[in-house]
Length: 208
Image (cartoon, rainbow, N blue to C red; front, side, top):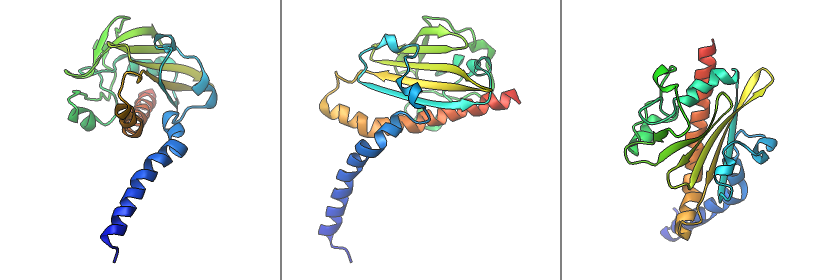
């Protein structure tokens, strides 16, 4: 039978080694899930909106559809619009009012530069800063500390959908940055991976 002292020591070791393992072995993969090396290092539309970002994630997926067939799913992103194609129940626990659409919604296709896309009633407002259909969409938070870009690049018979987040964390406390690194980064991968897969499934299904 394991003594309480050994159990406590084991838990303490796991708590210490878990973050270390993430930082040493998994963080790079977490921040670049699905992306090719040249996509990670590429200059993308929207990068200029936050050139001094402290954190950059670049995640990507191949979709068996043309850019113009994928674009409508990006155009209708947002709370009270087409949702985010991720885990709605998690989004809604945070009060984001996300309901992922399973079809293209014509009423949300006429997106324009300057439009504001709220993330729930209490969430950050994201303003459309780059709009180049069907190639690029970039939104920026009202506090200008977060830029989220989507880029569609033809890749043979398929299309690469690249999602890039640029975030300023310098104004966070040290504890805040540690929390963001160890919890928010992996959490963002879970949600964004589901989003990219959700867009892929919808675009390929609509294509038939």
